[in-house]
Image (cartoon, rainbow, N blue to C red; front, side, top):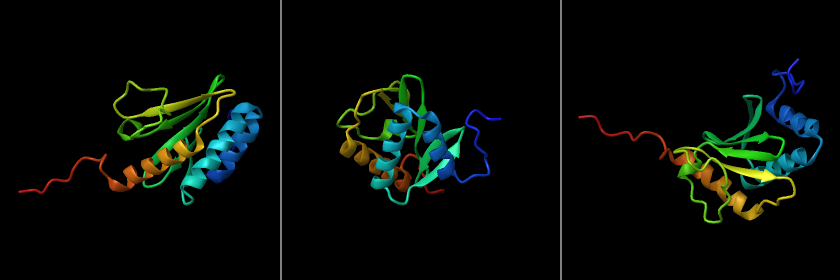
Length: 138
């Protein structure tokens, strides 16, 4: 049986809810709060279950939500292309593509800055600017 005890035949939203409940501690509470903020920022966000992990998408992956012993990690697929004026990104800063936010126990996430970052990630996905440019063929 898989670690989460979840069936891959279940809808992603149920698998994510189960993961949050199974954590049963501050990590589940934090992941639940993050999920609610993502849904407030982008009401038509798509919840997916990939790599045994919650994934939020809209015209491409926005971010994943992983729970580790010491932090809940939100990894933004195209984070290096996002503006982060409030400095939410605090992990995976060396890469050329992804950026992450690690939320340790007891740390509060700036809700308005986080929702703005989510909306920016959605806009980037919709713009297609992070994809190879389509130059006219001669």
